[in-house]
Length: 273
Image 1 (cartoon, helix red, strand yellow):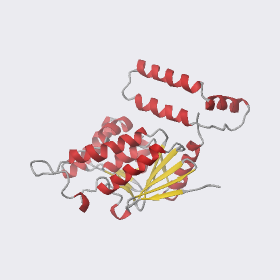
Image 2 (cartoon, helix red, strand yellow; image 1 turned 90 degrees about the vertical axis):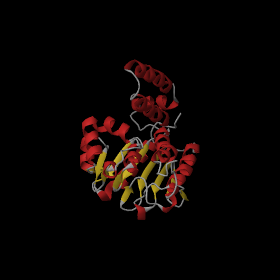
Image 3 (cartoon, one colour; image 1 turned 60 degrees about the horizontal axis):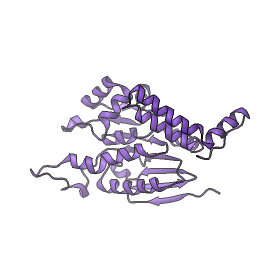
């Protein structure tokens, strides 16, 4: 019998079942804006996920009509924080403490992270979505980087992620003009993996997660490692990394099982070792 463990924080809901963790940003009245409280709750959730030896896949989405509206600069609990010596707000301190570690921890999770963008992703909400490994979006969703409209610049890794996903020309225009990119255009540009009908988003995301959760955990981890490293490695360094990781996988129980299942024309039964 399947058992679902539900952990509810004030702004985040975590459901765990059979190796799949569903993480929902749950502050719909503020379009799931990233307030200090939400950051604190996310840190606790990520602590739990990093300790979970049974974890096979993470699904990240938002409650309500939006995925994440970015930094919640209007939150009462944030007012008065991070003020520099000159009496002005220090946005860099907020990035160092909250946003940068969040993006890095999501990308560093050793299991696939599937993101279901159910509505608008704005500002740092775009970075949060793109920190995942497989990103799906409802047809009515959009991606907005309107930082320049208030005299600041994209952050939380957006200036690193965007050019690598959609190329420098599109990235520059999105950031300078601050225009919204719809889900269909995002798929065509390579920003996300797939656009779905609004009502089908969660079912499709769940199906992707179930497929990944049944997959060879060690191989999926090494695939993430290699693809992330490719951004910085030379070809020679990447070839050496592939060789090292493939050698390890070739000796794994999952590889032995996968080859046997292929020859026996049956579905493989991976155990993650």
